Length: 438
Image 1 (cartoon, rainbow, N blue to C red):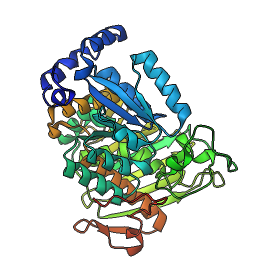
Image 2 (image 1 turned 180 degrees about the horizontal axis):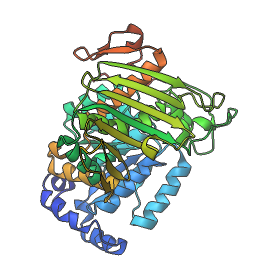
Image 3 (image 1 turned 120 degrees about the horizontal axis):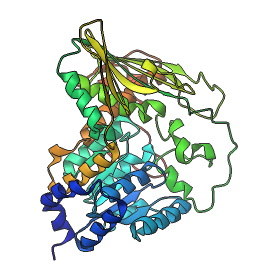
Image 4 (image 1 turned 180 degrees about the vertical axis):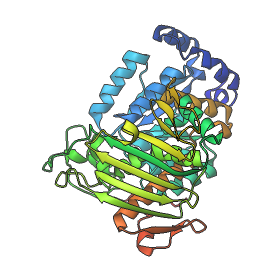
């Protein structure tokens, strides 16, 4: 019987055939899974399985019957126990359980790794996964600093591993069709692109006192390379996004999804200048550190990109709480997760509306597994290089906000011309963890 490693390298034909089963009911899916030998399945290990890590793992297992979950890791034993029970109930799988990701990476049954940890962990875990010979599916944004972003790209190139980023909109059919229309030239000259996230559901985060670490939580491992601080529930699990130690707020959380398509549609990468203005204007006294209101302007020379975000407000541009708008001389194409439309400028073109028709996350995890098997890196929908481009641009926005300056970017040196801004490119690692310098 062929080994699992052999199967990964030589099963392109199976990848093509697997496409016909994605729409089958769960009972049929389970039957097909049983017909594939466990020795021929791709072993999936997941690190960080409370939120998107669990969504990614579930999607990968549901849409790829030639995969099996062989290991899960989380610093919260309560999460670990709950997910293990769900895997046994829904997939009849009993993976190994780890509290330390390094033990999962040492597990020889693990072929691919899902990284669903907070942003400040992505770089270290992805680099170590690549060096351990694992292919990687990493959540967005790929890292929490420009230095870490570069290290992840370098690791992929050095170890020649498949690294897909969880920017699943790149796998959505209606997003791709919007780009086809955009590139047809029908909109005319596009001088301005807007991207925005108005999140009405995001209310204030009341301040809470520090408290004892919850039972079952390895808090030191959760902090990892972040600064040592007492445990506070506001900084744990979902809300870590609003604290600079671990993430970059809405600029990097929703921004990487939406700015990604702004850059993709305009075939752009390096802005000439960036400036940002905003702050904690909705809830100035709540616990969060990142701005709840922000406007960021990027000058690319031939067009301007505007990013806006606002918490506690749903009324975004064009009546949408999120989206991208490509504003051309002949009309505007407005795109979001529900579909896209063309708003004509006068009588220069006809109005048009397209609705979403597929599941981007399902297609993104499926695309990842297909490339794991084929080793044709050119087929990746969201490769680490693409994740790096948009994460870098979003980090630039946060750096402009923190410095309060209009910053100029030297594309040849890949540095700002401002020394103070350049100091924010490289993070400081704590607790004996070492910043990857690959």
